[in-house]
Length: 450
Image (cartoon, rainbow, N blue to C red; front, side):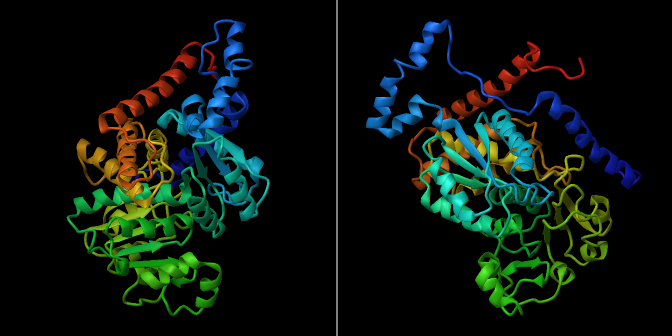
């Protein structure tokens, strides 16, 4: 991005999707609908799909509930569950106001992964009620995507459901952001010719995303002692003055205090960033949250991930001027976008295809490695460390990697060869995309500008 582009121009460009959204959401009255997937040649076919014919599949499933995966769409249904307490950058706006976001999530699931996802907004903020509701929905769904739930309760909800559900449960704000960040980090480290085990990483922010990133980069090979993480009160360490509060109410933060920062570094963001090889910031929208002089204090060939939206914590050109070699953000109009949409559609495609009971951290890591490999196959450079969403081969490749890891770990109900897994994923994803294009061509999806 050229320096000559003004902040005002960038902000105007960033505001255009919002203007279009206010025009198109009421035009379409939402983004998803339910369509039949079976033949309806005439009304006699309803005797097959409903009564009396449907009684036979019902009895078969009653005798063996696994047949629900064969005789219904359970194996391709994902529930996108939210209470609307932490929606995008909007905060606690309530379940109705969060519905457009969850519909959008369902749209991405379908178009990118061929997954039939349904938004389910809950009129409760009680974590135990959210857990109970999710567990009660298991007979219908093959998986659950938790979304936009405030922390710290989101950690308890995810951990409980992962332990107690027999279908996979995923929190995209945690695992999704972490997986895509790891994918970018894998390639960034390659470009600067450093070793994952040796790099010092400064993590700015201790919300759902960065806590999950902290965990997953360790799984990817970063030494825990080399991680320096900050929350709003400064660096996390064992001797924090609020240690009793952390131990009682923020156990995930306290775990970071106990397992990272081997040298017991104290101070603020500037102290955490000094001599760091990598900065990963998921804090508040900028610019100016991360200062140029802090980037300048980092190690040579510094890597900066400024992931806040809609404006990154520091503008990419400012980070480059300060000495960063590679910069990634959450925005599509800058190089190296850290985009969750590169993750969840392919991960759930693979998870559902092998009927996995859970999504493990190891499954996330192989997804990250495959996403990184897609970019590497196309040719890495400092402005291309991670693929773009329109490079569609990401999703079937990712699905295969995830499915094979689930089989290897013994959490899959089906054992399917690699070649067959790829054909399944490719066919399902292509069908979803071609259906949308067909509906547009035939005018069943209206052109708002016609």
